[in-house]
Amino acid sequence: MEMKKLTLVMCIGAAISAPAFAGGNNDATSNSESDSSVSLTKEVKVKKDLEYKGTVKISGDITANGLGMAVVDNVQASGGNLIGNHYLENDASIGDAAFGNASGNIGVNQAAGDFNVQGNSAALASIDASFAFGSGDAEIFSSQRGTFTGTNNYASTNTATIDGEAFMGASGNIGVNIAAGGNNVQANNMAASAFQGRLGEASVSNNQVSAHNGIRNESVVQNTVDSVDVRLGLRARGSYSGSSEQTGSYYPEIWQDDGSHANGDSATLWGHIDMDSENPTGDSGLSFDEQGTVGLRGVVSGQLPIYIETLTQKTTNTASLAGNAFNGASGNIGVNMASGHGNLQSNNLSLTSMAGGAIVSEAP
Figure (cartoon, rainbow, N blue to C red):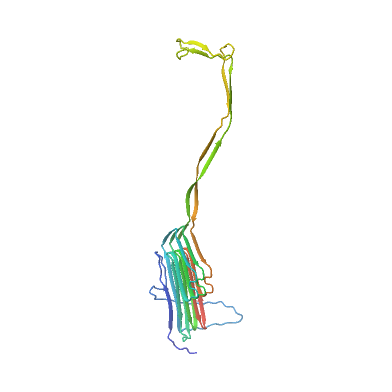
């Protein structure tokens, strides 16, 4: 069959997301520039190992006279950031009937916190049916970096929620990013090429780097001092008794003097005390024997100090998808939910649709 010479036609749909640096010095390399000029070098090599009973011979060239190409180049970076949260609540939620029964290309980014990077990209290309030997190409280049970030959470709460009837019955290309916290990087990318031709290719290149990050989560512990009343009682009871007696003939003398005794002055013996009917012998005395118990009673009262440590608030990260969210939704649905810090998330779809011919698909 004689081939007609036709002018090669290229139809390119490009979605370029330039590097988004959030206060850092991350380096990210891309094959595109931020002014949307695109430089692409494509080399496709297909190798198949086939096993048949019989002989199969495949040879020949595929001729393309038109190209429909959809390109997504997404570069996101968050680095060199420092976050300190104290008693902070980050709450990102999509609920009720939000986006219910919506259709088409739907991109939703919602974030609560600091230094979150989000993106939704879609590139579509179609080639006219008159180019019977056309080629379709869908390309996605995605790079995400989260490096050298620091987060200190002190009794902070991060909550990301999609619930209720959000996106219920929605259809089409749906990309949803929801983040609560800090330094989260999220992306939904779709590249699609639709045509009638001979060669179709779809490829995805996704690169994610998370390194040299520090996160510290602390709960609040409250120290309090209390006291307890203390009352102690003491009661004791007993008895006391004793006896005394005179041993021998004992007669105490009574002297009349100026106070000094037998000091050579004019002291005069005045008399003695007679305690019995016997005469004094000079060797006697009085003895006493005492024995008994003593009763005591008393009360001691006061306060005993008590030191109490109470966990009043924790640091919590919660991400939930609940209720009837996305119930009945259809199409390409990419959902990224992150609660916390330093999460990297990406959903990528590269699609080529053609009527007849060969399809080449790569997913490195």
